[in-house]
Amino acid sequence: MAGRGGVAIAFDVWGQRGWYGVDVAGESFHTKDIERLFRGKVPAGGATLDVVAQLIPEPTNRHDRNAIKVAVGSSHVGYLPKEIAGDYQPVLRQLLTAGYAPQCGAQIRAWPDFDYSFDSRGRTQERRRGISASVRLDLAEPHMLVPLNAAPGPAHAVLPVGNAVHVTGEEGHMGTLRAWTRPQGEEWVHVTLHRVTEQLARSTRTVVEVRLDGEPVGQLTPKMSGEYSPVIELLDESGVLTAARAVVKGNALKADVVLYAAKAGQLGEDWIRAAVGAAPAAARPAPREQAAASAPVAQPSPSDRGGRSEPAAPAAPQLPPAGWFPDPAGGAALRWWDGRNWTEHQAPAQNVTQAAAPANAVVVGAPAASAGYESLPAQSEIEGYGITVIYDHQTLRVRGTNGLARLALAGAEHGQGDVVIPRDAIVSAKLQGANPLVNGNLVITTSEGRTYQLHFRRKQQTDFERLTHELGI
Image (cartoon, rainbow, N blue to C red; front, side, top):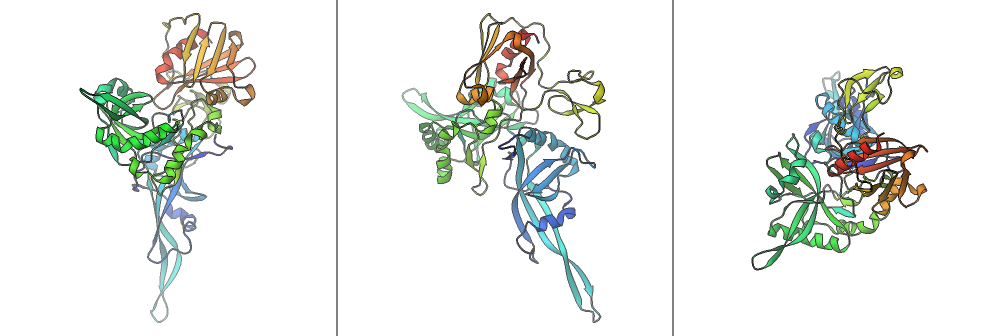
């Protein structure tokens, strides 16, 4: 599990609304652990405790391989109910694979548990034998736990969660929004806010434009723009991009964008100081940025719960490519991973190679097979995510567009310049296509055993498919 110093980075799952709507199962088996969370004895009238709970998949659980353990620190307090755990496990395991430890708000209610008896004179006697407890989680539906896109790459600050603000003018940007709609009807995304000047018939006005992965998707009304302009202007002067959480709702025909961000007048002094300080912090590569070019710049931003700080949301988790892997349920057999989920396909470990896919297997995110790719020009220059790739049919040159990308691409031990790979030194080129959860990447392995990951966005995928086809490996 990746993370700072080998430790997973705590990540507050998205979609929390401040109310506890999901009951935890099995608390009665963990009352001693729960009782230790309270200071002193639980009073006779009961007590309530608001805490942060970790959500830990247990694929090797012998009773249920979809089990999700709920823990508060070192205390095991129960499990997600069995009937919903299977829906949550894929996304929680994706977060763990990416080096993040998912957690959410929880509320614990406890009250003393007594045994009653009568003495020889008929008087009631009571003996305290422990506690009874209930645990409830502030947990959204599985598809609302992680945003569809990564946080913006440049230095940025994510506004604390606020009341819903409806964006206007989405109908003029359906060409962009259509790609962000999902069958579930709504999904979280990162957006950025920008002050733009509009030309009117006889004057101009400044409004806030909302952009999704750099593309405009609407704007705020002039009145609402005035609520956000002061913080955008302040952060712009500091070289920091203003980001926020938003929900895209609808379908391919009609989509709406709803912003959930605190207004300028609602921001605390601590948040403002941390946000303005995001610019110099962004220049220092964190361990996750060293691991992959698509990793976000983690900047502190105050949580909407009690002023507690939280990291900016991570990039959508990067999943392993499709292939045979040890069965997470245990045993000697291998199980087929389709690029996003474990399938029902199994095979003996000694008879299967990593490249041999089962019959009729679907590979999620893989490019469609096609013999119709056009040949790349003699000197091709392709833009990726944080990189520029130059290929002349003899040499593959990869250039990071900033210091952070260069470090992530080649690592500190290989210097900060371009990565230059002779064509005849490339022994494999494996493309993991972009999908709704993750950016894509082209993994280049050389005869010296070095591996380079070239990341790209969905709109850049066709160019990387052509490059992979051109390499012919």
